[in-house]
Length: 231
Image 1 (cartoon, one colour):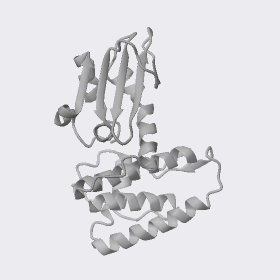
Image 2 (cartoon, one colour):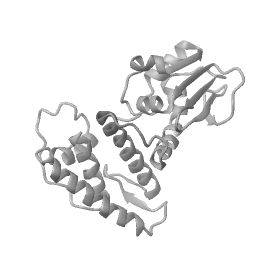
Image 3 (cartoon, one colour):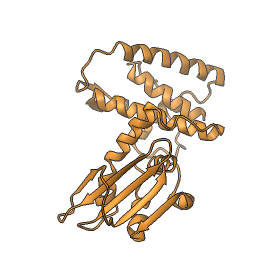
C-alpha cells in the first residue's frame, strides 16, 4: 500500500514540475524491467523509509498543490507537455492518463482495505473511456479474431455499457455502442471485473464465475488472455 501511495505522490510531483529525486535504485528490484519502470520506481524507492504520517502529509500537500495547479490551468488541451514518463504528449492525453492511474490505484487501496466504492466516479468514467479505445486492438491484433466477426462486451454494474468490436473482411477493427445481431461471441461481466482484468489486477482463471461467455469460447479465451493493457 505504501508503494502505491508513493507512486501517486511521485508522479503528481512530476506533473507539478518538481525536480526528480537523485537516487540510485537497488540492484535486486527484479520487477523493474524497463527504463520507464525504472523511472517510476525511483519515486517509490526514495520514499520506502518514510513513516506513514510523513507519507500521508506529503500526499495531502501534493493534492493541495495539484488541485491549485489544475484550477489555474490556462493551456489548451492540445498543448504539448512533458509526461511523468519523460515523453512529450498533449495535455489532454496526460491528464486522462493521470486520472486513469490515480483511480486505478485508488481501487487497489480500496481492495486492500476492504472498502469498495467510487466505481462510477468521474475517474471511473475516464478509465472506462480509455479502456474502451484499446478493445479493437485486443480483439483484432492480440486475439486474432477472424474476418467478418463481431465481439460484444456487455458490462454491468455501477458503470454499465455495451460495446461491439467489428472485424471487416480485411481484418480491420472498429468499435461502436450498437447491438450486433448474431455476434461471434459475447462477453458479459461486471465493471469491477472488467477494469481489474484490463489493469492486470487479476487473471482470467480467477474470475471465470464473474464472466458469462456466449458463442466462440476459443476466441473469448484468447481475448481474455490478452486483456491486460497496463504494465
